[in-house]
Length: 404
Ligand code: HEM
Image 1 (spheres, rainbow, N blue to C red):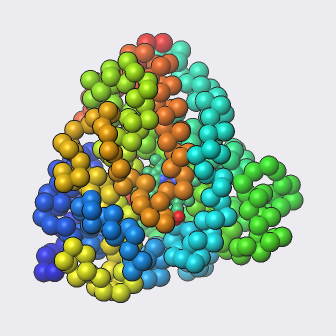
Image 2 (cartoon, helix red, strand yellow):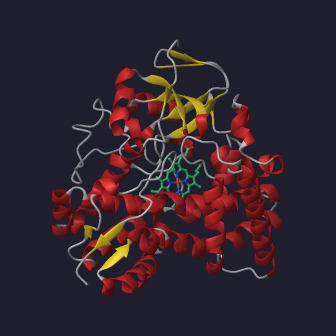
Image 3 (tube, rainbow, N blue to C red):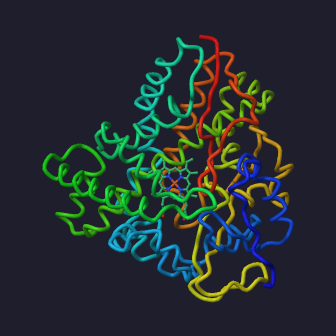
């Protein structure tokens, strides 16, 4: 394809605040569009829904970074960590993927997750108790962030006091915006994270509990179903995947509602609409944006375009989820929308393991906030909200006011 890669302008605040005009243009340009994405990486964007669905179930597109030809992808990881931190299910193909996912899949079924409802409600209420008397809050730091961090930490058996450390290292490790992150900072964060996880698992071995990490340690030590690197990589993945996106679903969902007062009123009037509203927030402006990376194991033709071996293919779920060929009036937020099978949780064998948990947390968090914070409104004009650039999307802060 002769097309020049288009640059996703993460340094431009207007794009970061609202990437959808450019997303739309990319989709209209063609089904596969070369682009320079977060971290300055060159990718082939799959922009339309049906092609995205097909690409996510195409075994020629690998999840393993070692199949990528762009060495910068590997260079984001310190050499010592490349093997160990990559041996997680998200970055594996079958048969390793199948084995690793099976080890934890039972803990994340809708039924098992449903048992967490009372505890999630309790954490939600406690966080809101702390802000209700003030009549104002910063809902990312006060609410959207601590809720999923607490839930996943309890599920895994991670001490709450450790959360500030792992949050900081995660922040340092993730790609943000157009620039490659400083390798020294990334390196340091990885080393610290690995040292922390090693120590955490050591402590769990000494004092097992009724939690997921203790169960995984048994699978490792007594049943040899995974090796030590895989155990560390699994812990890392569950811990980080378990909160980083859900913060953005809760914060982004509330921000989206506050910018759409009629939908807000509709939802206030009928809490039964909540599950559908969560799906619509995910479709309309999901946390994974523009999408999900794969690496071409061989030359692949996608929608008539030849993609070379080793290329990074980005299934642009956030662009495909507004494809007018799939969704009626796709740029309109409609919490009553039916037939809303969006790609925000992916599709196929890597479909988000935590989707039932994220949905439940989103419903409880947003439903309870609307109930307990009457007159909820943004404390700044919507245009002044800052959004996270690149990769994972959501408001950096969400200052609000309400009636105490
Ligand atoms: C996979 C999105 C919450 C754990 C994925 C994928 C997406 C995604 C798009 C597919 C990645 C791919 O195909 O390469 C989201 C969103 C969330 C969310 C938008 C919140 C709104 C969670 C939570 C957990 C979690 C709460 C809890 C542990 C995982 C895991 C995978 C995954 C382990 C890898 C599954 C596999 O490779 O088989 N997620 N996620 N996610 N997610 Fe989530």
